[in-house]
Image (tube, rainbow, N blue to C red):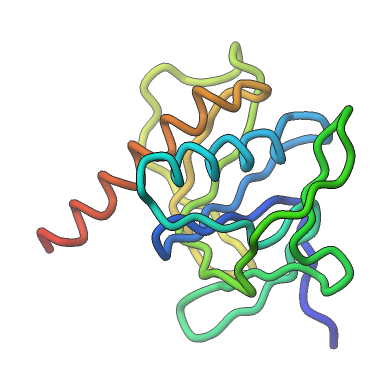
Length: 152
């Protein structure tokens, strides 16, 4: 049986996998590129894992993602084409980002999670087609998660 294939983008920042979902043209790949560049500029280790298709694998209480071999290390940017990026072979999915139209976002949403291949993963919502803002928010959220993990 082949692994589930999700239409999404997965990046790895300091060992934490960020799965980006949204409609076609919502800016998943643009957000990923912006997050990768901003994370690297801030001294974080950041790698693309998969763009457009993420193959999922559940191991115990965690879900992992990887790229299909034919597109490993490639990211598609609308209007530019395919770009080759340094990539990681896989990442555990630690955070899900769902992209929505800005007017559809709640101002102060309750914390939420979403099942990915049957595993509950923390989820946040960000505005679509705003990669710079989204990358800044994601770096802040990831830093907060690391701080919380260190104090536990």
